[in-house]
Structure formats: structure tokens, C-alpha cells
Length: 545
Image (cartoon, rainbow, N blue to C red; front, top):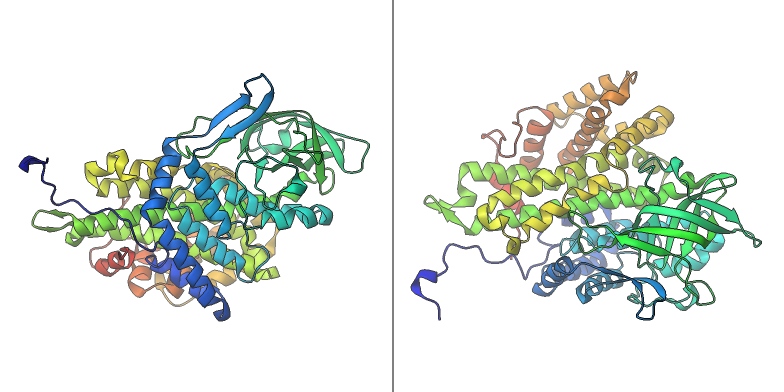
């Protein structure tokens, strides 16, 4: 029986029992903007249903359980046989199964598939981000496999299937739906994949090889198959490595250990060894990077989406808390200084969302111009958006005060997860250098980028000034590597500003351009000009229960 000293007052109710999709105005508007009108009713219905699931108490409990009970490696069975299996908490399978059955690995073969899948990914991973890793790699494996039409014909229907079969290992032909992982980096090379030492020697049958070596990071080791890089006689080459061979026997795939990571605890990241492991070549010998690069590009966009999802959830929690918490004679959300902080965070979240969804729409359009835009905009977005997730999560946590520092709030889990997407699929320097390569080698990429930002010309003088300054920097790329981060950051901000000026409410666009592009901003969140319409920005970000 509670005593009077334990009466609970002035605590925000849990943010639960709501539609995560429909409550996100920026995301819902982006879907309506980028989808063909004939697809809208069906897509909005699907996303609202998924959003309701993501905001449910059940999904939130699954997320907490999957994080609290990380995967466990079993190298041997009770008799001493090597099995190399990973056991997951049932909550992981519920999350992953719900994602697969809702089409989050199926973007390539349906109209508007990338926009629909990106919005769903952004919504569902707010329940728990770790299982987004196998979803992302399974989705992204499709374009790499298309380098070999025979492989694509067999595997693509299984990759895009909306059937989840859990942990059951079986011969590929006996699986309706599959998951894919990826192994690129090695101890000695890291991001320098051309320094890989894993060897691949041809077998008697055409296209078949035996791999020997290791991978320092192999993601999602419970997957059905993996795309890996290894040194063939003709140079670095891409290979498909199945866990189970056609005859039902286990391929040699030795999981040495699972990584003990800062965050992303629900997801298994591993070190693996190959010892005459059977593999099938994908693409030509010596062209491994070119073959796998489309997979890398797609996973990089998912890093942007994952960071946008994390920021949205952090901002939603912060605004929700402040809308229900009172201090110093009124609601926190109405206090001018807290309103400034919340508005600043909301700008960062909305800018990330509109940029991520614009890039997803470019995948759907699949024209020469849109492909050129992706070549430059994906590394720029990956560089900038993923870096913003950590300060956003930290500031949003602080909005909850001591409550936010307690595990029960879920905010520490967001903060631990936040640095991940900036590191995986190429860290910040790799993205900046990739953008420089695109600028130097692919003039069409810069042309497409400038056409995109130019669509907002004349709408905001601060954006126009930022574009002019960017053009000045781009005119001289001599010695650009040392200033690559500065240059790519500016490109990302200009692109975000252009999208917000065209599509966001004036209060959002004005605040973003004034602070991020016009320089009227401090060095911490909550330093926006006080003359702006910050109340409208905050109200737009508030999830409605």
C-alpha cells in the first residue's frame, strides 16, 4: 500500500499507444510528396498500421528485452561438434519478423518501394534499432547480386520475400525468405578494404572458389548468406558465402567471438574465420569493390535513415516530457529557454528526415540525373546526418533531467546507439573522401547536386548566400582533403536548407536557414534567435497521442 510520501505527481505519462508514423508530420508529408498519388492510400494505410505497432507497449517491451538480453554465441554443441550458432532472445525474432513481414527488405521490385520501405524503416526502428542491421544488409544485397543474373534470379525473390523463418538453418533452396550479412573489413585494413588478405582460389566448377582468411567485422552472423571481399588471382573480388551448402551440410564459417559493443547490444557483430570455405563469385575477378559498392551505398542511406529515426524518437520523447512536466510555475514546453532547446532539436530532426526521404525517392526515380545526385548526396548525408545523432540524443536526454539518465526512460539506449551509424559503412573521413572523389571524377554528380539546391534559388537570402559560398569553395579543390569535412558539411547543410525552404513550414525553414546557414546560432542547442516562431516549430514536432 502506497504511503502519502510516495504519491506520484508532475511526471510525464509514457509515450506509448500512438501512431509513430502519423505523429511525425515531416515524415508523413515526405511520403505524400514523393509517392505517386495512386499509391498513397495503400502506403499511408500500411505505414499507419506499422506506426501503431511501433508505438505500442508490446513493441516497446520487445525493444527493451532485445537490448537487455544480448545474443549469445554457441561455438559447439554438447557433444563437441562445431556449430557456430548465435542464440537471440525471442523479442529479437518478434521485432525482425514483424519488420520482414511488413516489407522492410522489399524495396526493389514494387512501385514507390524505396520511399515506402525507407519510411517504414524510419518508423519501425524507433522501437529498437539493432535489428535494423540485418534488415539493411538484406535489402542492400539486391543490387550487388544483380551483377550476376543467375545468382539474382535465385536469391532476389528470397531476399525480398515477406516471410521470416527465424533461426532455422537450411539449404538455400529450402528457404522461402533469407537474410544476408556482409564481411568486408579485416584487422590490418579496416576501411582500407584493398589491404584485405583473405584468399580465394578457384575450384573445378566455374565461378566456385575456396576462401581462407578472416573478417574483423562480419555483421549479422546468423544470416543465411554473406557478401564478402577476398583476393582472387585476378585481384580483390566479391563472393557469396552461404551458411548452408546445397546438399544441406554446413559451410565452414567459424564465429570466433561476438563484439562487446557500446550500443547496438541486441545485434550480433562478429569476427569470423574461413578455412577452405565454399564461395560463389559475384561479378568479375578484380572488380570486387565495384560489385559491392551498390550494396554499400544502400546501407549508407540506411545509416542516414537510422540516425533520422533515432533523432526523431529522441526529440519526440523530449517534447512529450516537457509538454507534461511543470516547473517554475508553468509547463516546461512553454518556458522560453526550454522552447528554444526543443525547437533547435526539432530542426535537426526534420532536416535529417526530409533529406533521407529525398534520397530514397531518388532511388525510386532511377534516372541518370537522380543516380548522379545519389553519388554525391549519399556520402554527404551519411557524413553529416549520422554525426548529428549523438549531440541530439545527448541534449534530448538532458531535457528529461535526471529521469533521462535512468535506463527506464530509454534515453540512455538512444545515446549509446547514436554514434553507431557514423562509424559503420565508412566513418566520417571515408565519407568526406568519397564525396571528394565524386567531385573530382564525376562532373554529372555536382551538376545534379547544384540543380537540386538551385530549385530553391531566390526563396531565402541566407540559402542563396550559402550556395554562393559553397561554389567559391568548390571552384578550387587544390588541397581539398584537409578541408574535406568542412566542405561536405556545407554541402549537406545547403541541401537540407534547400529541401526545407521548398517543403517545410516557413517557421521551420526560417529557423534552419537563419541558424545553420546564416550564422545566427551558438555552439550548443538552444541558441536560436529568440525572435523566431519557435512555438510553432516545437508544436510541429510534438507527437499527438
